[in-house]
Structure formats: C-alpha cells, structure tokens
Length: 493
Ligand SMILES: C[S@@+](CC[C@H](N)C(=O)[O-])C[C@H]1O[C@@H](n2cnc3c(N)ncnc32)[C@H](O)[C@@H]1O
Image (cartoon, rainbow, N blue to C red; front, side):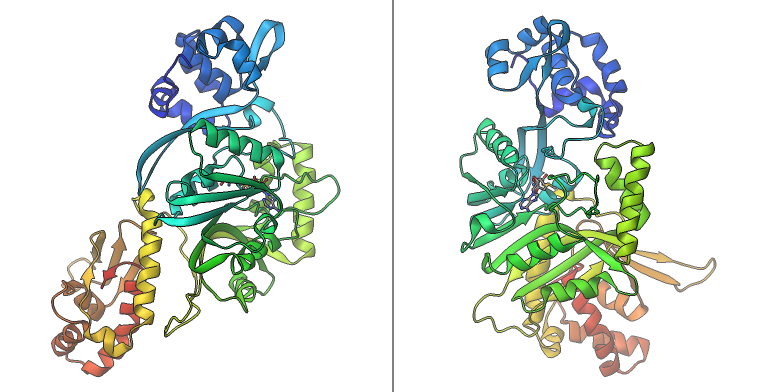
C-alpha cells in the first residue's frame, strides 16, 4: 500500500470526533474530514475500508502501487463498483493495542459492517473488532503457556492475542468464512502459530486439553421464532443462556490441571430466581474454580433494543416486530433481565492441599473500571494467586503475616462540616476493577498501618488498645475483611 495505513496516521487524518462517530456507525463527519485529502492514498484506503464508500479506479490504483488494482481484486480486497469505481469487499483496518508483552499493531480484516451495507447484516456476517473483543483481549492473562484455544474465533483477534503468550493456538469456529478471514489475518500479520479448525463448541478439540482457553462466545440471547435472524457471529443457536453454560461446563474437560479459561457471557435472571443460583448449578460437579464478575444488568426491554440495533435493524416496523418477538420469548420463559460479565475458570491442580476448594466467587462489580485497562489480565492473575495464598492460610497464619497496601490504593474521608471524625471512609482502587470498599475506624487504622513491617495480628492488637475494644473480638471482626482486601488486590502479602 502506498500510505502508512496505521492507527496513528488514520487517527490524525480523521480526528477524534469523526473516529468516534464511525464507532457509532455514522460516517458523515469522516467523509467531511476526508474531503480535503481526496485522492491521497491514505484517504482512499480509509474511504474504501473503513467507510465502505466507492472511490475512483485511478485513486484506488494509486493506493496499491505494488499490488496493483488487479492484485487487490485478485486478493479479494476490492471489486468493481458502479460507473468504473472501486469498492472494498472487506473491512480492513489497523488495530493498535498494549498488552503485557508490549505495544503492537495489526491489520484486521472482517466483513463490511452496517455502514457499508446500509441495513441489517447477513446472518453469516463475520464480525470485526468490537467492544466485546477488546474487553476480552484486555482481560487476557498472558503468562507464557504451551497451548491455547480460542473458541469462536471470528476474525481471529483473540487467537492473535493468545499467540503472543502461547507457543501454539487452536482457533475454532462454526463458520467457514470466519476461519478463512481469521487465517487471512494471521498470514497478513505474520503469525504462524495458529491452527484453524471448523466445528461447534468443543467438537473440533475433542480429547484435547489446553493451558489457556479464551472465548468471546456467541452469547446473545435470541428468540427462537419464525423470522428472527440468527446471526452466527453472536448467536450460538441455543435457547436462552444455554450456550454460555455449555462453554463453561465444557472447559472442565479441556483444561490441563491449573489451566485457565476466560470468557464473556450473559446470564438470565428468571422470575424469583437469582442468575447466580443458576450459574452455581452450571458449575455443579465440575472440578473448576470459578469467578463470575457481573459488570451490568439490562432489563428485558433494554436487552432487546441493544441487540436488535446491533444487528443493523433501525427503528421502524421491522424493529418493532423483532422487539415483540424478543419480549414474547423473555415473557414465556420468565426472564426479567440479563446480566453480562467476565468469567474466569481454573481446573483443579492434582494433589493441591487447599482449604477452600473449589473456589466460587460470584460477584457484582457494576460501574467503571480502574484506570489501567491493559493491566487487567495481570490483575486477574494476581487475584487468583492471592486467593490461593489465602486458601492455604488459617486465620492464625493470616494474623502472623505482614501485608502492604497496593500502590494504586487511595483513601477518601468524608466529614460532616465541623466534625473532627469522618462519617465515611472509603478505600479506592485506581487500577484493576476500580473497586471501592467502605471502611470503619478499625479497618482503616489496620490498612493505614500495613507497611509490610508489623504482622496483621500485632497491628490489630495495637488498634484494639487505641479503640479500647477486646483484641480477640476485633481480630474476629477484621480478619474476614482483610481476606477480602487481599483477594481484591488492596492489600498484598
Ligand atoms: C461474538 S463472536 C467473537 C469473535 C471474536 N472471537 C472476537 O472476540 O471478536 C462469536 C464467534 O463464535 C462463532 N460461533 C457461533 N456459534 C458457534 C459454535 N456453536 N461453536 C463455535 N463457534 C461458534 C461465530 O461464528 C463467531 O465468529
């Protein structure tokens, strides 16, 4: 290509507002930003591949000086448009990222989206990098491992990320087109360690185990009704949240001991039934540690709107028809709302002497994340390690340990005007999941004294003296909360 078709160059050309508008499927600001650059190779590439607009053949030829227009056609990148113009046949865009290995940039091809098609997507649409993709890649743990599996690879983005820390990666999908595009992306970016396999769920890896499984599965709950599109890219063809259950349960048979699976999922809240009760049932009988972190809940109506709009259907009679089908399905099955979140599973290690096994953490952390998005994988790994450390420690051993406050932790104190003592003390996490914890005076004094020197027990004895309370009572009150602070990364062993 004649232009430096990279994240920075495209960002400079379009500007933030036009880029953000493209993210909302609006291309008018981008078209205006490109007007002064008409005919320049970079503007031509952006017009073709990001906006899905046609360009004059001469401009396209100038943008592919080495490949030539014929080469770009033969390679399946462009096709003849109306009146001798040229159109893109794929969405192709630079993608930049930061992970624990460092900074990187790839070109990622996928199907042209709603912008180019101008309407609802094809059912076999192969999705590009979306919000869920970057959420999962941001959560990905990256300790070096031998083998990783990306289940439902789509354009291959998670497999590419996994290939940065796994010696070999198997990427599966039910869509042959998705696998072709993912294989193209791997070749385009010089990654040779990914093997692509066709099939549903764990079928293509029957009998195999992996150190790391990642999956942004087709978790979207879709009514099984006549005339409701079943988008391959987001809908696994099962009823309700059954597909997420299958991915979760199947992980037990495909992880090596100590191996970790990370996925995104939806779970349904049925009338009078907490979603986490159902999730606990999914886990029954599996030798899996499980950590479900719910990030948001949408009521049935919000959920329907989100996913009908995501499929490229705009408000109008067809939108209303689909909306009705969604609500009908939710009503019939007693579903009132749907949770979305992150799932981390870990297969039991053989011969592990652990106090609390299997681990079951089912929690709701709604609201914004901390400020270090690229550190989430490390945060999850550290949290698993902290939970192992805690599981191996009795209360007496915890009291004998010395802890330090993590570097991203700050404390907020709120006072009634004129009062000497705070009415509210909150501990805040700057990174990770950006958690906040309310503290009372005793716990605040303990945290404040955790500098790695005195043991937890010694600090609690001193605080008890200051507060004039019984040391044994204070110990019994504070130790469970110290465990939570260690597990969540506020305090470090
Ligand atoms: C939400 S997309 C995720 C794509 C990509 N991994 C990402 O993170 O952007 C889900 C993918 O799962 C695939 N899929 C759908 N049903 C499947 C099944 N039963 N087994 C495996 N993959 C499936 C879809 O074709 C699609 O590529």
